[in-house]
Amino acid sequence: MTLTPTEQEGPESYDISIKVTDNGQPSKSSTTTFAIQVNEVNQSPVLAPLQNVQIFEGFEASFQVTSTDEDFPKQLLTYRIRNKVPQGTVLDIGTGQFSWIPNEEQGPGVFLLSIEVSDNATPPLIAVAEEVISVSERNQPPILQIPDAPLIITQGEPVSFPVSGTDPDIPIKKLEYSRVTPIPEGAAIDSATGLLTWSPPDGFQDDGMAFRIQISDDGTPPLITESTLSVSIKQEFRIGITDSSNGLYNIVIESAEFGVLITLEASTDLKSWIEIAQTVYNGNSLEITDPDSNSPIITQRFYRAVIRP
Ligand SMILES: [Ca+2]
Ligand SMILES: [Ca+2]
Ligand SMILES: [Ca+2]
Image (cartoon, rainbow, N blue to C red; front, top):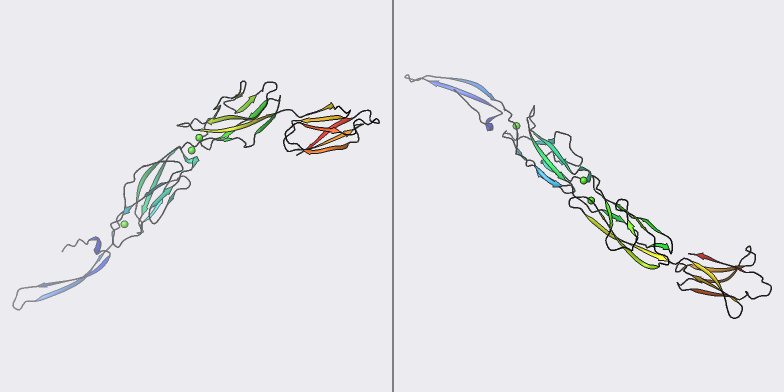
């Protein structure tokens, strides 16, 4: 007697009865009974081959790990990653669904995953497959930090402004600063540090200069970001005295900042001051007459302008 139980027939216990009969007249027979225990033989699960993955950092790597196990009754299969893997990788132990979004620090890089499936027999059997994920660097544009408000320079003063830029990429990119549109003669921007320098010619005045500046990285391909630095070159604040026809003094105030509150004060001894006039500066030349300036008791007169925002 031979018996080869199939996967479906184990584990199971079978009672076998064998009866032997002769062909005499009358025939006689005899019966014997015994049990056959068919044990389960655990077969290893099988992992479907994995395809290598290529992605850019910031994008999701997602794939399904699948496996089979021939055993019956059906076994529970469990997935796990065997080796040390980058932060953020997720493999669902029950479904085998893998996902990972590599971050800026993780790209560029090549990562090997050793993935295992195990059945729940005692002892369990496992199958292992390897997967390579190649993460490419994705170049992001550099950022220029230029204030929205104009840079206010007093006439005659040199311009020195550190244009500052950053780049979000890791590894760090080399940054280079340059002008986009023509900038005035003598003005320069340091390509490495971003320091903008310029000595405006004597008497130069311009309320709305625009320096169009760009920053570029050395990525592949390089990326460029542009921005505009507004520069306003104002006249120096001036206060002066002129004689008027009736013997009174006129005090002339020029080139204060638009909208400031100007209080004109006078003194005979530079110690005590009296207010003569107060006004909000409207951008034009301001002329204030001191009504007491021709008083015979005044031998000398000092003036000052107190400016408040
Ligand atoms: Ca199995
Ligand atoms: Ca990176
Ligand atoms: Ca970049």
